[in-house]
Image 1: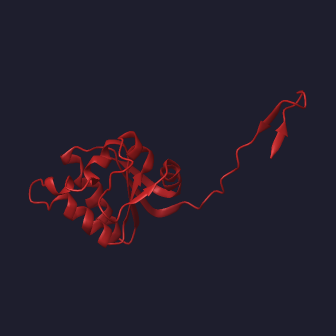
Image 2: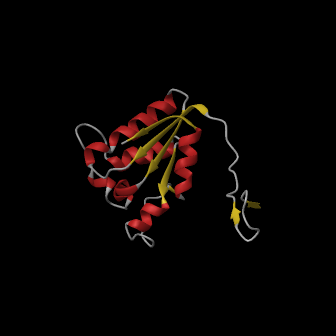
Image 3: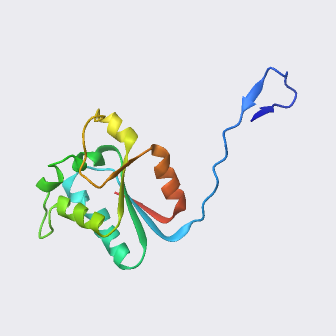
Length: 143
């Protein structure tokens, strides 16, 4: 769809972006965004997502930037702090509980990992998905 600007010549056409249909905000939805590959920052979003699910909330986890490094096969198995299980065990439990884990495709490309496989069960999605999830969630937490 084209729109002419006021007081402009017909050759000056501005293309409008298609409008996104607004979705209803889900007050029971919580989005946990993992941005870090630091071992001590891995547990919080997973523990909180599992707890939210047990509270009958709708949690989702999204990995972006350096956070993806933990999702490379073998990496999460090496992270174990205190009396907690390994991060891989936490990720597996999160997935088993039906909590979706999303991974930013642009971050994967940024790391040069176009051909790198990540742990099974995570969903590779476009960057716009993070914006959509944040807009739909009642609360968003960043780690």
